[in-house]
Length: 315
Image (cartoon, rainbow, N blue to C red):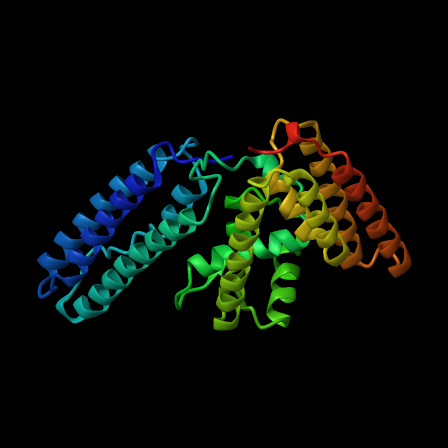
């Protein structure tokens, strides 16, 4: 997995300096052919510095960010420019400067929401390998909410930066379709990618989701402070299980030690849930078989809950 060598704040600061240099260059007037040639030379030098930086900032030199920036490097200098052509070439130069700045802004924002590229110590590729479809949707929504602005962002790029593999070629579109049907995002097809922006409804949904997560964590912490916390916790988990499998798994992930044997069982159950949900979406499993497998997963979770001991819990 591609990763930043240094921390994100340092990367962000360096990229913003390049953006400022491009802005300064854009604002310089071009009145003569000599001005044009001078600014083109400055831009070429900036391009070399930016490509070198993007190559050195990550664990893999020839990475997608280097290639993405290099795709803009089209040599548009004419052998000779007449005064009559100066405005045309000047406009083209300014357009190229804006393109370069915009792609750097996008790179910076993509990496902001890419947990694995930023080397978030609390998250590993294994944590993301068995997420259910619902959990992937929630993750995508949260990342788009962090990027809440007027721009659109490639769904595949966000998934990739967070360790979510494309289950099949149209996986990004299918995720987007489900979220757009609920008016949580707006999705478009642009330059070979399905890109999206979160709606205000989607942002409000994420806010409620985060509030529920904080409340759950608070309740869990409070429950564990009680002398009979294990029995109370089990009852709470069983109540959750009657309502929603995903909520139960989220709750268990909050309270179980990562090195507990039960944590491995939970990963397995979570993987089964993700697999059966994908089969249901693809239409390769009947409704009765889908319901049957969900009941089996509930039974497995109930057995797991009943087997919980104090030694399995985060204290």
